[in-house]
Image 1 (tube, rainbow, N blue to C red):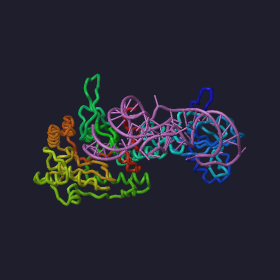
Image 2 (cartoon, chains in turn yellow, blue; image 1 turned 135 degrees about the horizontal axis):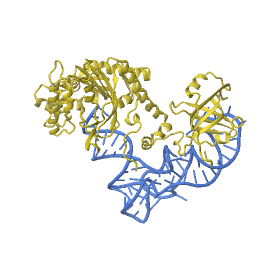
Image 3 (cartoon, rainbow, N blue to C red; image 1 turned 45 degrees about the horizontal axis):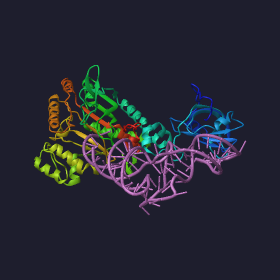
Image 4 (spheres, chains in turn yellow, blue; image 1 turned 120 degrees about the vertical axis):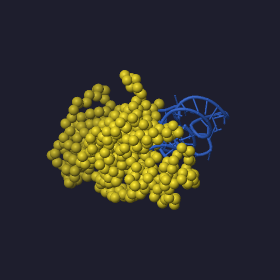
Amino acid sequence: MSDDTPFDPPYRLDVTDRVGAVLAEFDHLADGEETDRTVTVAGRVMLLRDQGRLAFATLREGSTGDEIQLFALSKVLDGFDRFVKLNLGDWIGATGEVVRTKRGELSIKVTSFVPLAQARRGFGDKFHGITDTDLRYRQRYADLWANPEAAVALRARSRTISLIRRWLEDRDFVEVETPVLQHVASGAAATPFTTHHNALDVDLKLRIAPELFLKRLVIGGFERVYEIGRVFRNEGISTRHNPEFTMLELYQAYADYTDMMALVEDLVAHLATELHGTTTLTYDDRELDLSTPWRRASMVELIEDAIGVRLDVGQPIDEVRAVATEHGVEVEESWGTGKLILEIYEKTTEHGLWGPIFVTDYPEEVSPLSRAHRDQPGVTERFEAIVAGRELCNAFSELVDPDVQRARFEDQVRQKDAGDHEAMALDEDYLRAMEYGLPPTGGLGIGIDRLIMLLTGTTSIRDVVLFPTLKPEQ
RNA sequence: GCCCUCGUAGCCAAGCUGGUCAAGGCAGCGGACUUUUAAUCCGAAGAUCGUGGGUUCGAGUCCCACCGGGGGCACCA
């Protein structure tokens, strides 16, 4: 609108119909057919075709992305001159009868309209949208309109999280919120962010995982508990990493890691079915069959498949070191056989897995919170799921013995002293909590962002995070 | 942190080996048009070519640094 009168939008608008509902209800209208059904819809004018005495506009509804054509006739629409002066991107409310034009486009023959907001900035090229990635991430509010396909993935995120909550609540899981500000950031191997509380005059860490607080709650009687929340890791940024990301963690008393495997595959298959109507997806031009059950194989079995060598955490360390060196692993002196085997797995095996597959029985040395395997020494009842070539989750039969947990933490401290700056921190209060008794428990963590990438077919985490972390704008 | 790569008007985007090089389209502005679908047509306007240095008679084009984006490595979920 280019007008000298100051723009003064109404304070509210009675929207009578959703665009999608109108399109569905009047789908049967024949070309040129009119109705006496009057509706008021709202959205942004995305296209405008001015013919002189009549005009057509494409109105897009924000929350659905649905579009409907507005048909304006100068002899019908009071304010026609103002209508054709609308700028692309302006928000309006439009009232009129539902009709289908001679050329077959379901439309609203506008009898009145009210400008709701002016777009003083445009939404980019009306055909190409905005392709500059910097602009798309920094000005997501514009990207969402300029690139409808971007909005689809971002809306799918909300729907997915909603589906997860419903699914878990149907299984009696209780959602909780645990501290983001912590004195000891533990529960994962990662570098935390540090901040400061002025009144207490103490430095605090932003959490790197909710794990230890959720297990405190199991001790406190929450037999099925979960949290979907933001965690923060002070690490690099990539297509798979944002410094703040969303984690689902859940804990189920009286369950073990086999129960967690069943839960993960059921949940992911359910989400795929709800979102796509099938468990067969395409990701990165490759087929992905999420139907259950997923394959299960231990880490050492998979390494053997890949390099033909059967490793065991109990064998002499020199032999394992030799295999590691042979496959290009840069071995560090402090590593035991468990760490070596994990490194060999990551170097030789993991990248060849497409999945879905559960990689089970991680070495004890690299799994400080997992319970020892019930009949295999040196490894734990832990698994990660590899889906579409990426790690989707991490889960285990929880370690329940406070003395063993203390010893594992102390081992982590030794690893930290030996130079591993991401070794897990010892949490004294968590050990005290464990002394009250943690029942046998299955625990699971899923990176929600990566899960949504999988379900939306996107290959960059920035496509599923509304406002990804970027360097400050100049 | 390292390596590669990109950065031209609000948006999309030509510009090869340095010499009318600052095309074109969309949006915005002015005008025409009674069934358009990225409507079309006419007109005027809009760019210190990311920033700062350097090489050269001459740089958007070459070199260096910095800023920002993307990809990869490292690290992790």
